[in-house]
Length: 185
Image (cartoon, rainbow, N blue to C red; front, side):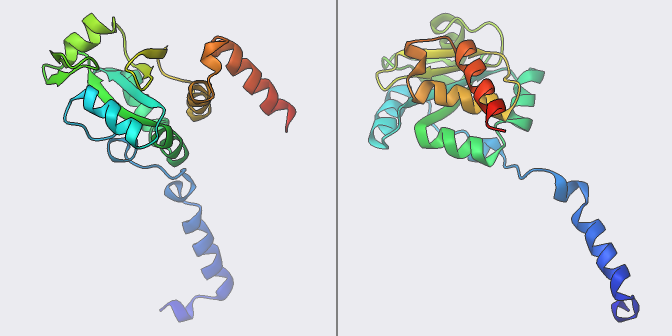
């Protein structure tokens, strides 16, 4: 049957197929398996693993099941292969449910629950909150809310990995990066 279709019509149909919404959509991968690391809930052990793997620290994504901003981050930012590769190269990454009753061990080796770790130890009240910890378990950077997109989230990662957090606020760094991007066009 295909042999009866004129070549130019067949080419047109193949072009339409290639331009389908699925083909036009950027590649994305499930953040549960490609962004977040699996854990047994022992953050002290995770620090040792991060150090052994040559990572710069741990990133915790504090979330809530009903949080639309958390879902947007997972659906449009944390699912991007470039984002996944960059962050997995530099950090061990975990998610914490701020209402979770799951038992865990904090960075100091104390038994706690996810919700106590979020609320009492880290004062997380809104979600999402992304907290970066160094290899000693000390908080070095906190970002509350969803980023505007993958580029801003990558800038956040660079801000931490390159040590800019030690000398300026992220808003200033982000403005500098946006200005440099506009000038390079």
